Length: 263
Image (cartoon, rainbow, N blue to C red; front, side, top):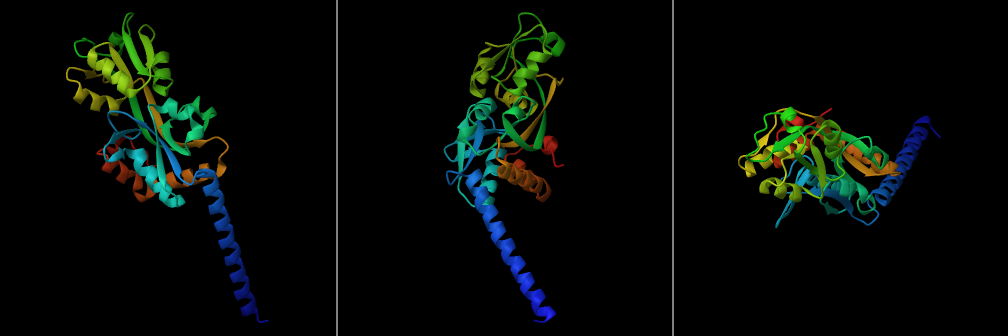
């Protein structure tokens, strides 16, 4: 056998091994990341969409996680199914019902799900109800002031640690705290600034404070002990930052790129 023939046969054998290996890896990934035959993407639904929150209409869901979930499912080669929950904590506590999620990241959650790259970093602050004369956080943090946040979220934990005198109470959903603020039944609400600015447009007389009490990063996540899933979403998000997919998702939802993390 000539050396050239030997090299040709060796190259062919290597290609076959690589193809078989990649096929096996792809099959293994599908089994782990889409055991139901669909990619179940958990989303939190509220009155206003954004980098984390999504909205629901007669035509379906919209939001950055929706755009990313659709693209992920296409790469895996399976249909996408959106799993709707009222907030990030409900998503985290129901990890068996979804395969991929996007949620605010903190040290407590890192013990319960596996996070991939963060893609958004927002300032967290307070919106004050109409009719309440509060100019800054110091004026807000007074005994008798009622501040709300969404139950068991990074924002709730941050607000409780930050405010020393005001009472901070957790509520079930975005819709619930929105209604309470609208009715004047709470004095203030803690949430990401981008969401509060949208809320302020819907609730005349309310005011978003200029100060920030916490920075919150939103990241892709998968259930614990899903190494192939974690490797896939990490690669996907890294590429989405580089190839413009993430920016496109922000543009499709009319979001500023000021909070987007591209590195």
